[in-house]
Amino acid sequence: MAASDSLYDDDTKSKGILWGFGVFALIVVFVLVVLGAWWGREPDQFNILDAAQERAKETDTTNMPVGYVYSNTLAHIAELLLHKSGGYITNDVAPPGVLLDNISNWEYGALVMLRDATSALRNHFARDQSQSAEDPDLAIAEPYFYYENDSWALPSTEAEYEKGIEALHKYMTRLQKYGGNVKQAQFYSRADNLWQYTEVVIKRLGGLSTRLAANSSGANYGPGLTELERKEADKQGTPLAKVSWLEIDDVFYEARGASWALLHILRAIKHDFKDILLDKRAMRTVDIMIKALENALTPILSPMVLNGDGYGLFANYSLSMANYIARANAAALDLRDIMNRG
Image (cartoon, rainbow, N blue to C red):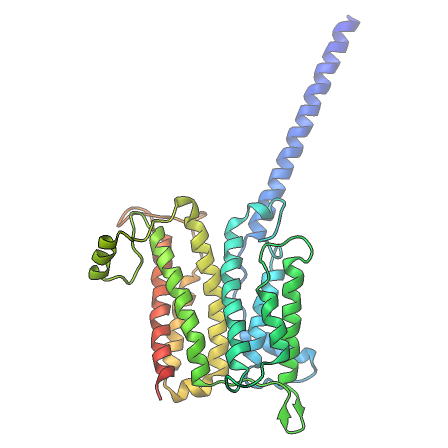
């Protein structure tokens, strides 16, 4: 009887341990799922003027010269990448961050647009002409944003991007100050400068639109190809390869991140390049780009990226996004032509 009781106690104890491990595992999974849902959220849009005014208060001034809003928008985009819910995810090596590929691709899309806009600031907007010296703070800021985006070891990606943000803030402070009768930093909101940046935007949007169209069911071509171009591609044996179904959501969220960042950059351009846009009658063109990108950021109702075929039951998210980006790209082409006219 005693031996039987001992066996029963051992069996009960083993079951209790297994139940304990099971409950613990369920709690861990639940916490990871909740954290993953929170960390994987896309950050909301922000008001570029409010953000610039908040930054100006930190330097005890309300002075926001031309270029201040644009520069602060870049810095604020970088800050949101690092400090949104869950922080910067791309270089995470543990769950749930390492499993959140959608927000990681979103971060990359936004980062590419941030890099392009910072390069434009350093190489064009802050320089009077090609022979003029570059701004010392921008020469520091730009390379930091080009640091590898997935480094978790020392130096970490976050640490390097923080240095880029700090250098942008120093440039902004110098924009507000004068040395004698000359500003300590410059920003030139000219048509030729905006034209050069728009050229880069056109290439980025065109590439995203093409990759998104290649995501669609049965598609082997990118958008914008004429029938003659498609036939020529077939003759040469170089049609665009269809993207794997495993990568459909990757390209989609990269485009979402790029649209989010470019939307705020365009709003800043609309503010700081207001005079030249009005003079060239190009304000409407910028508004068309902004509206297309706002549509691209419409909230997603499905828990997954749908890839419906033709006029089937389910939507095709990639083609919808490609349509909005192609619309923004068409407006960017118009903007480039307008800025290039005498």
